Every structure is written in structure tokens, then in C-alpha cells.
Amino acid sequence: MRKALLAAALACGYCLAAGPGLAQEKLKIGVLATLSGALTSGGEDGVRGVQIAAKEAGNKIAGKEIEIIVAPTDASPDSALRAARKLVEQDKVQLIIGPLSGSEGIAMRDYSKTVPNLVMINGSSGALETTFVNPSPNFFRFNSDGAMWMAGLGEYVFKDKGYKKIAIIGEDYSFPYTQVFGFVLGYCKAGGEIVQRQWVPLGTKDFGSVIANIPDDVDAVWLGLGGGDSVNFLNQYSQTGGKAKFIGGSIMVDQTVLSSRGAAKKLLVGTPSSGGVADAWDDPRWKAWVKTYQDAFPADKRFASPSLFATNYYNAFNALKQGMEKVNGDISDGGAKLRAELAKLELDAPNGKIKLDENRQAIANTFITEVAELPNGDLTNKFVKVVPNVNQTLGLTPEQFKAVGLPSRTNPECKR
View 1 (cartoon, rainbow, N blue to C red):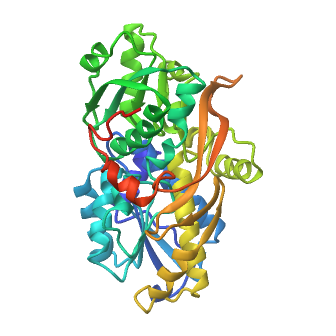
View 2 (view 1 turned 180 degrees about the horizontal axis):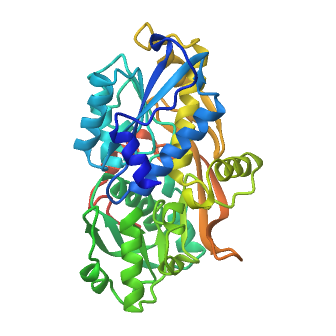
View 3 (view 1 turned 90 degrees about the vertical axis):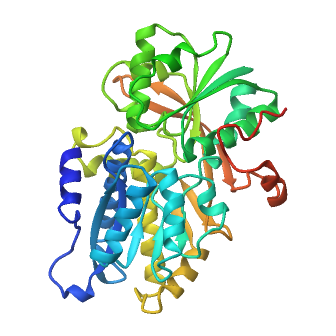
């Protein structure tokens, strides 16, 4: 599946077009998806989310046939910029969905300002700065950022799990910084202590020195790794015979990791985490989405349950579709009417209702979860509770939130 998706993208786009029609009548939509590097599995599932949404729409938006062109990235800002320029300058797309990774999102925020008539809807990237710092009027994010996905987790692991002292291991870029930012604000205010933060490059193969440096006297280790990095860490940690308890960043316990091959992933059983989805949420709309996802692809071509990436890209397409229907598909005014409709759109998504704030950033649910093993051996995120309507300032006033500063390797400090 991975090779097929990448080959299709490189062959000038993976196109979802419906039936015959005049070329000028088609709506060309570009999709930025990470299809190489550590986060490849997430990019592949993001494409699946778009495929499902397009099929549900009959491959039409506002009566117009659609052509979707997937442009591959490798999670780096430069690759996202190159891909976006190709979509706009060569493929002549009229709209873009994407990107996936945090630093890519910041780059796309800035790029979108150079093409003000093109509406861009975020795929799944979750860096705080993308919408909080110098937001772009034509960049919309219908998913929470990484800090919002951590809302309530710090308090939960301190009070309910009894983790009083922890260490942190995360990938060294904007999204994990944002996740730690949200976690630290809640955890340290509750009384927790963070004794160490280790940052590793995206795409790290050898975690030996990182594992050796984990303190012996911590109650748990917060892991902010994703995709291939998560699997590499777990495989190497299992070989050491380590017994640490873990706290998961949102993509550390996503289905992109829980559905991976090998037994090392079972080290995550019992791991508390939080994010934008909960695999086992007993909500009718979520259960319907899970079934739709499972029915759309053979079991060996998908995950056991839709990942965070599939869900976010699915929601992004549906937000675009609904906005376009409000303006009858007319973007001849440079997308002005579409931008106005998207700004006030409330999306009834599988993972709950989503609306946007003044920066075109989602206000949405966060789900507290714990990894559990099903009777058939599959791993799932057991639903614990919902933290509803989380906003980007995490309940603080804008002034209080800005005073904390932006996420970084060291910020925020652990203040009780």
C-alpha cells in the first residue's frame, strides 16, 4: 500500500476524478501528505481519510467533479513548501488540504499568505504557532493543536495514576514541543515533577543512549514519538528488559503504532494518553466512522481503527465540502465568500462537534484514553473521559497564555 500510494503521488498525483466532464468544470484539490520518512504511515492513513470522504461525496463538491492530486512530503518544512508550490504552479489546484506534520504546518501558514486567493485547510499538523502566531487569513485548522490534545492528561496521570515524578523523551521539533507544553501546564500545576527532558531528531534509528539515560527513580516516562520512531524505541527498549511505565503523546499511541508489527508495542498496554480521538469511544457517530473506515479497505491495507491522521484529513475534506456547498462552488472572488463560510462553520465530525475561533483554529474535544489489549490481540485506546470544547489557550485568558511563552525544548518550566 505504501509503495502504491507513493508511486501514484510521484506520477503527477493520485487523482480521484468522477466520470467524464470538461476539464475547466473540475475542481482541483491538492493534498499534502507525508509519504516518506518516520511519519509515512500517518500520511498514508491521511490519504485514506480523503479517499473515503471523496467517495462519500460521490467525487463531487457543490455539483462539480473533483480531481485530487496528492503531493508527497517527508515531514520537513522544505518538502512541504516544494510540494505546495508544485500543486499551485504546475498542477493549478484551486484548494489545498494539508499538511500533516507540525513544522510543515508553520511553513504552510507562511506560504498561504503568498497565495491569498487559495484556501488551505490543515490536514493534521498540530504545532501551536501555526494558528496562534501571525495566523494566515486563508489557512484554516479543523483539528486541535498538540497542546490542546494534552488537555487534562497531566492532571489525570498525577491524580489518578499516581505518577508524581516523570522524565520526557520527545522528537526535536515543533509538534512534540507543543505536546509537552500542554502536558506540562496541567501536570506541574497539579503537583508533578519533571526531572529530565531528552530530545531526539525525527527519524532516529538508535535509541541506545537515550534509553540508558532514563533516570531509575521516575514513576513514568512521557513519550512524544511517532510512526517509525515509536516502533524503533519500543523494539530497543524491550531488548533492554526495562520496566518503566509510559505516558503517551497523542501519536505515540495512535493506530499507526498500535497496529504495527511485532510484540514490542505491547509494552504500551496500560499507557494513559490523550488526543483528538479515542478508538473505543462508544458514540454512535464515531462507531459509524470506524465501520466506514474498516469497510473501505481490506484489513491488510488499513489499521484496526482509523488513526488520528485519517480522521483529521477526513474532517478537513468534509469541512471544505460543506463550505463550498454554502457558496455553490463559487470561488471566482478569490475565495472570499468561502473563507467567510468556513470561519463560521460548525462541523459535526465523528470525533465531536468542531467550531473555529477568531484565528480559524478548532475548538474541539480532547479524549483521555488508556491502551488496552483486545481478546484478538489487537491494541486499542480505551475511552476514559472527554474534556469538552478545549480552546487554544487551554482555558487561560489570552494574556495569561501569551505570558507563558511559546513551546520550546525548555518552555514551559515545570511550575507547581
